[in-house]
Image (tube, rainbow, N blue to C red):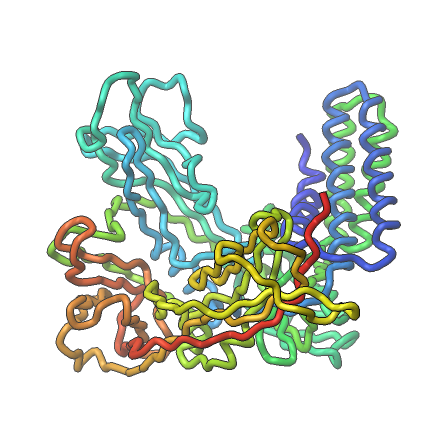
Length: 608
């Protein structure tokens, strides 16, 4: 299939994936109806196309254009509600050059064998030094290809793109069990019905071979923009940035590079624009989506679709015509456009421009040992995990600020939601964001019964008389923050509920420790911090590490060493990307119960 549609299809789909649905203004139903009509007409027109190749091509391109239009409507009509995230471009600031970032990415990769209770499956997890979620993928063009796994009997099993039911041998293929880690692999041993084969008697995976390739831009430029920059072009070297528009929750940006793309990336067409926004609080807003096709590009694809729809059949000559048209159009496009939407009101923008007019390609063959680090270990010794790279944890400072959370801050973070869908289990949920304070509160939450009273409504709809109820009519689960009540046991429908629910707040004491003067119970073995559980039990202590730069180091993983399975913890080991020079300890010294008083107007039960 030709690649004319690829850029548009991926962008349209990305925009849809990134946005969250929400309420719409009054004119959305009209737009939606038009879109639904367009979609129905388009699908109907496909039925009349006889040539399957032509039908597929029209379905792909037309479907992508409809997806893009739907994304535009959804993004434009989404309510503006502040949602905060991390500085997703912070990692670019930690490394002196783009190439240094690439080297860290490539050299920090290792492979873990995951714990398995299966007799015929062993999962392998490639662990990357940077973890990214959309839209914050690793910012440079990159590819990873697995080739084979070597087993303990020296047998080499080649990688195959999917598991085969008919292959009788040992197989290496992508894992189908874990969608959250799409890079995971599975070694599958033959399964013979009725024959018990212990996994440990099978040849075990020892090393994983593959290849990685990353393209680094020659340089990365940073532009800080605000409302006053709209319409004023900013030029640095061959790069010109133009802030076309800055509205409440979106920005339109055009980028021009007078230098051509380096030959190393010509086929990749990498996204050169990384855009972030802050609101007036100075916090980074999360993105709700982006549209990367300007009006001229959409018009071009619409013209190509119209040409397709005039055809009776697909032909090589017609495919060449479309491809040539696309190449000619792209050759004339010397700018890159982005319309980026954010969850919140924008105060200022930070735009990083990746200049790919010069580029460096890093290719490396991988032969990675398969390592075993279970969360709980019965080993008495500390297994080394040497790491040749340094990676910082840019979310740590924000996470740790809640170590000093106050009662008022905790109360103000509570949100209340309710449901009367099930009359026998109507419920109210008192929720609040999970914080570092919650992490140190732990599971020991003692709470006494809190007084709760349900009320009727008076003639004015205000709170009326209290309702006498049997004890089994409602139940408060303080740990989950849920009040459940059975309307079938109420003599009349309640209109209000008044009471209090216990919240839990830890007193946390912070200390800074120089690694040259570690107290009894703490020791450092290269990049591994060993914590004696008698001196510093993990239910009430947390440790964070910094290196000489003063930045928090990212933790690779942690292992709890125990005397026996489910038994007494002996010591914990925390492995870091880098060499700690300073530790920060956080100890829960006390646990306070905070009564959160409430009056909730209840939703009416749903009528049957």
